[in-house]
Length: 390
Image (tube, rainbow, N blue to C red; front, side, top):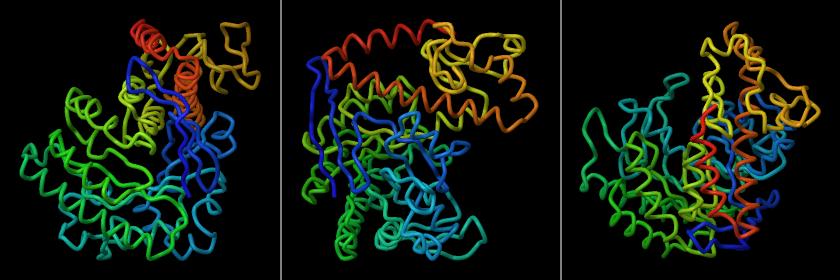
């Protein structure tokens, strides 16, 4: 089941505000979806995700197929029961992970033959297999199997002909994905994925052919795969607003806070990216006033919180009061710098909580601005604040 209600639009851009209803609940859009590759958002309890405002999270079809496997997943009725997350879940198709295997895989019209990165077993992923796995996972949003068109391979930038061949195979795989999804009687929603590399006319061809299949929602794939930022922004500006107005639009694997705000301006409803969690584990945190590198020696004796305007547990403690308002229940930059230097697991747990809270709060502020008809003002203020620096 999927229903999408468009609530508001912005007159100065393609930004929009909506409500997405899925089998496991409602999602207010625009939304950022935390990534839980192996059935967990690393270092964060499900309860903490709910408290910080996560409405939908991701699971990874490829990795969950490898471990723990479909027998285990089926025994729990799917991913929700296994990881104890009872709100919506989106699962990717496994296409990106197969693409990232490089020389360990061979792509044919039928699907992808590859060696398991876990134990070396010879395996096969096809549109049909991907649909079967995702049906067992019982994810609210299922993604078609596509071929992720690379920007370059071993120094060779993908040509238009190569991008076309890849895009056209993804279209054929979209048809097969839909046929298998329907054969299985999957009660959830299947999204098609627009491909075409860095070529706008290929993106439009892909989009038009996918529209004929009438998916409940559409994604833009094949970005954030190594291309320069200006190339990614060019495709982001071109494609999302051309997708159906009455269906949800998902930009896959993007990105920085700036990417999210500009993506919303381009008409995107849904985002995911490993950046807030991965960067947190590497000592980089996002704040209202720019990015902060916790490993820098200047933070050794710094009494400030990560972000004085933030109400996450790392910044404001259990009080929920930011330091700027007089609360001092959170943790200092000096303490978090110390935890990182010592390799203490509490360090990346707290920075992950902060980064996800920042991303989810950013989306809350975007939704509020759209509700108030002030997205243009918000966009300018956001850019000014981020440029100020920490």
